[in-house]
Image 1 (cartoon, rainbow, N blue to C red):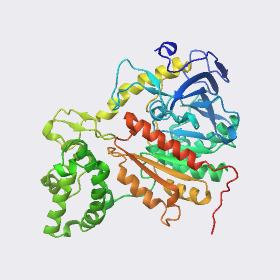
Image 2 (image 1 turned 45 degrees about the vertical axis):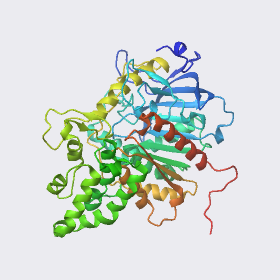
Image 3 (image 1 turned 120 degrees about the vertical axis):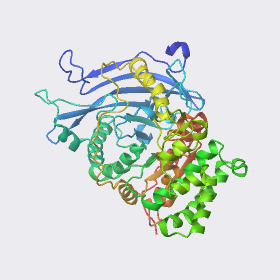
Image 4 (image 1 turned 90 degrees about the vertical axis):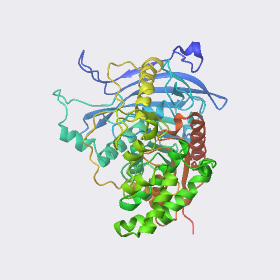
Amino acid sequence: MSLHKHGKSVFLGLVLLFSLPVLAENERQIDVDNLVTTQHKTTILGQTIKYSASIGTQPVWDEEGNAVATLHYTYYQRSDVQDISRRPLVISFNGGPGSASVWMHVAYTGPRILNIDDEGYPLQPYGVKSNPYSILDVADIVYVNPVNTGFSRVLKDKEGKLLAKDKQKEMFFGINADIKYLAEWLNTFVTRNNRWLSPKYLIGESYGTTRVSGLALALQESQWMYLNGVILVSPTEIGIKREGPVEVANRLPYFAATAWYHKKLAPEFQAMTLEQFLPQVEAFTMSTLLPALTKGGFIGAEEKQQVIQQMARYAGISSKAIMQNNMDVSLDFFWKELLRDEGKTIGRLDSRYLGIDKKEAGVEVDYFPELTSWLHSFTPAINYYLREELNYKTDIKYNMFGSVHPWDNSNDNTGENLRQAMAENPYLKVLIQSGYYDGACNYFDAKYSMWQLDPSGKMQDRLDFKTYESGHMMYLRHADLKQSNDDLREFIKAATPAEGQPAIYKH
């Protein structure tokens, strides 16, 4: 795709290439520390925006000062801003763990997004186009790829050997290791790019919400770097446990939203909007279903039957199926069951997507149709965009998903870390964004986590929750791309204090 032909973004021809150590000739390994900068312009909300795109690598150092890994990043900076001390900086992570930053980079907040239809399905020819809703008008953005994702890699030592696998896991591949080295890396990035005075925001999607929740406190307490906002897109449990009856009950609003989308509900429910329908499902979940589930096998037969019948009305599957599962309808079963009579399955991360299994029988789907659809369009787009439009030439494979397992999930206190960071920092606000059709990180679980995040209730005015009629990556649907970016834009503006406004608690 020609930049000049399509006029979506203009490459002004200025390329700055800076490269530190280059490895042995013919060895396929990323440069340890390099940078390529190109100049562009685009149109956002009708306004012409000039910006630079800097793509490169920056080392991760061990305690002895040796480069043990290098992280690949892409940094967009508006080039017509004179005073960057008032210019917000958004630091963006995706999840996995083991996922590159590609998803939000070329589909959500960045100036260029992949070529898909208005509902998010692949289109050919593959490629990218301008994002008229990017938040680059109000904030600079850096997209960071953790170790083994994107072009980021573990480095060989002076003897040409990689760290032992157990040492790699200790340093990089676990909840707390990930937070620790990324906090150090961000300190260097902020220093190199003169962003210490800028208002700062972290945004994470999926497992990235665990990452940024932990980073909020780590940056404050180990780097002395204070944030203005944390944005959780399709959040995980962030260490806030949802087990037993709570875990089971919290699925029902997601089931109901999905059944509504696929028109599997009674006419009175289908006639409602989701915003009209879901509050009654949520109320039933909390006031009726959850107490019933706590009774287990000792629930009365009449009460059990009444609860099951109402669950069936909301979930769009038979009361018999719910009875056979003892009211504990698993996600796997639901993805297989809802459209079984049509010979279709539904997606995990976005239940609008349909799949076809080898057999209609069974309780688990063969594959997740939404993920195959996304990889279909994202992979060619990011490989083309980085190498051809941003001029970053390398033979290294771009890892959409990298080798980071086994991941150490122990001692996940990230939700508590976020609460503590908010308590310590009166400036810090949190925005949560969730799609109704996300079955992996469902919206009601996210709402539950928000309720539990601050048991005191003293900071609830600094927590905001937004929902969208799409899935895990709500921004793939064109209507939600606009709305979710508008929500980000308003959050960033609201969380950036007026000049002279102190960070203070008052009586």
